[in-house]
Image 1 (tube, rainbow, N blue to C red):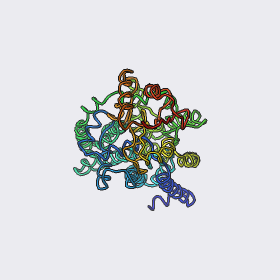
Image 2: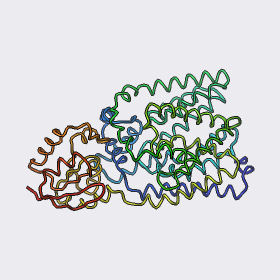
Image 3: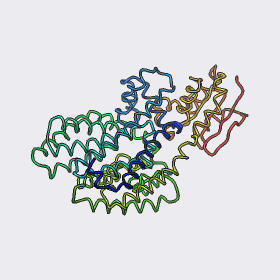
Image 4: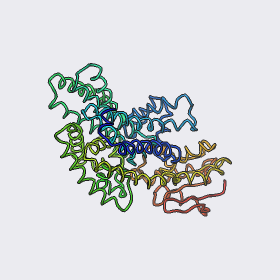
Length: 475
């Protein structure tokens, strides 16, 4: 702490601590005010299954299991029905995000520059992406924390090889990869730290890495068998700008969207190159080298699977390393980056409070669902509406269509379904004794067309660019 006091003028220290306070308040505000969205609802749905059912469900979906298992442990005492305890899944992300802050201080101490922990933590606090995903019930914040912890344990092992430190590195590294696949890049890049380590430390790093690989490899057969179609959504045309925006996501924590993203992306790429070059030799060289190698591995992987760079999300496991490099730059650099990040955060927070389309749709259907009417929802809308109406006191009112949605609610690829199959399922649902009388039909969907062509003169309750809501009389 004395080193921090000596290194930073009082005003700079005050601003850094204020930034950390702003970041904490923004995270809590976002957690409370943001509506749940479809992926979080999938987390909640899966986490309420038994551990064996979670593992079985992931065989026909995507992603590793650890975050879902943690969420399961948190939710299991509260039973299967959705309700207020669902916020615990977001609290898991909030706690993981907040634990980055003391860990950044610890990393700076390991690097021999403890005074750099404060600006690094301040920057991470106000990165809009770090704030956004700290209030989301998904795996990104936890995977980022475990990857950063693995880096800190690797630095500690270089200083003093000890069994307990090696075990911590093994568990953190394997845990990061088993939480989110993107963590494999910074975790694999830790191998570069063994190159210039002393012989005893090098052996400990190599053995820890091999042990982590063995643990993570237990999931590899399932990962390889997971259907490629489960990630088809990542190839949508709307994601085409993700690679252009990635440097802005990484260096400024900038959220996707906005007219300035192209300029921010170019500025972020130039600044990142300068930061890596400057830090390559010096106290922060381990940060620069691990980040550079992990980005190189990502670039190689993108050549084989272009869907790895997604809007915002891909940058999340690298954000702590970017914060450390910015903190080690001349003072005007973190000051400028922090000011920009804070401005972007101020612009993003009001958007966080806006109701989602799924929330607005659930409000429209809540009263008739409570009255006992059934709702057919085609495609992605089904699982989300099922959850939202159950939370509103109308469980079991949603019919998922087609059946492929119920088989794997985390993804839906309509192109794989035959029209004859859709037609047969539509006829069976509409001829059932308790047939739905409300229909949520996404625009341009084959499933929607199969239903709409059989409804006759249905009344249109809602029409939007995304979907139509139709109503028929009960049979």
